[in-house]
Length: 156
Image (cartoon, rainbow, N blue to C red; front, side, top):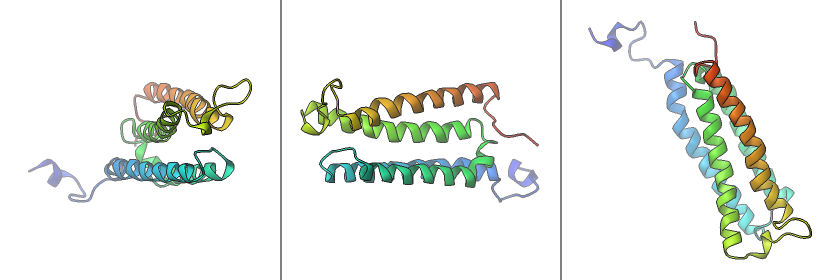
């Protein structure tokens, strides 16, 4: 008798297995959405404005919907929610950091700061602010996940 035939629901993936297998498509969706955000920023002259930031709200809503849909099951996958959080953080913030890097390296006027900031205020917030403050939340999440041994939902 194989391990799969011994399970009461042989051939039917568990909710944890479905949640685990949802991580790659989720990450790819965030990657595509982030690329669209950066395309919109390019079309807006590489300026960070309210209009170029609104699509980021769509990504945040997508993350919230993903957590509502798979969050409980991801809590049963070792470090599942942390992986989703870390992937979202890495994809979104790396996109902004790389975009800013290209603009700074090419001496683009869109990133040149005024007055006390060497970097445009919008880009300063989108790079340093977002990466730093969100990073603090990710660190707190990581420490909590370690404390819970990687499982963030009650085990049955």
